[in-house]
Image (cartoon, rainbow, N blue to C red; front, side, top):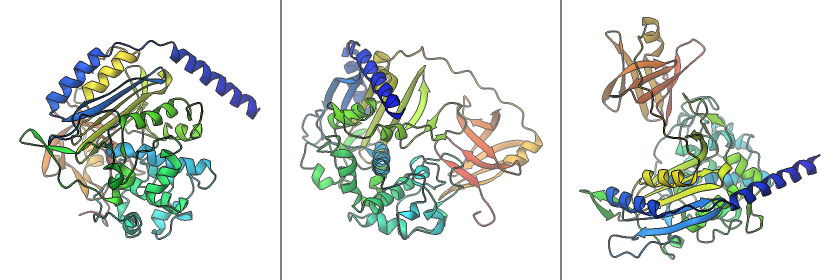
Length: 462
């Protein structure tokens, strides 16, 4: 029976690939126009854009220069630092170890990694990789270029790095991936950079992709830029911290990232053979934890999984010092778009949208229904008021004259009830605060679009 199921899967994949192959590539002149206009409008020195359609690369081109200080033209071989797009690769490495029978994603990480507090040791890699571990988001305590940085940092953590109950709610947390990277080191017996090479990069033929800046600089490399007085300037010195590598520090190119995506779309196959187990990519794409307030959107392992204009997309972006990146995939259509830039946080949103509109059966963009405020009752006010904490971040919901306000970072915004467990603010009520009740009916967690926070107790209230 198992063999029959595997054979059926192979036949289905073959049929899908055959159908993809019949798809004629669109005219990309409009895409190039969009890219050039967006680079100019955003003052981005350069970018690489790759489009995969029908399971094959149909567009791969570099634009602009590696540096405003006499740089070279960018090509699809130019390396960029990815930022948080790295997270899906950390998930792929741990998933590969699991497929090799050397690691269990749902087992306590303390089974593999030493030096952790009991609460941290009880977490699972599944929780860390799906941003559901209750881990706070915070800056690393030091900057280091040594491979020992990951172990030194996480072994120094106390239980206060956790803000919530594991498995309870999605909350974006780079520290969760730092911890996952340390677990990868302990479970594989190798430094994080070497483990990534052995488990992911080399099997996929990503031979220039690296975590190490001194290796990256031996290849064509785009330098990172910030804007100063609306003019792009090279960031000097370039930033690097080994303690942050597992959440956002891979150097790669458009062509090498395309190899990862092609294997993803083909269920692990690349160049006619299995490069990684199909189960690895299934785990990355899994609907592991729902996004609060959404009905059909989830986080996998370093990937968002959500519907967009009638097409299900898997995606993740990366914002780092001097760079921006984006990978968006529609596996059912053999489609992906990859964008790499050398400007802090720039992911060329209009470019990715144009690529999707050219290649995917998108439904027309629907106008969002205008939200209207609903009355808040006194009992509801009592359920919601309080302080909510995520690591160093604190949000306070307070009541004044029968109205609710959100206080964060020294500013206050009036909140309006716009749905069940939904509060909104902004000129069009476009910004949301989702709240989840605890056992007593009071709001225990709030979610603000990226981060969750838990109601402060007497021990955590500041």
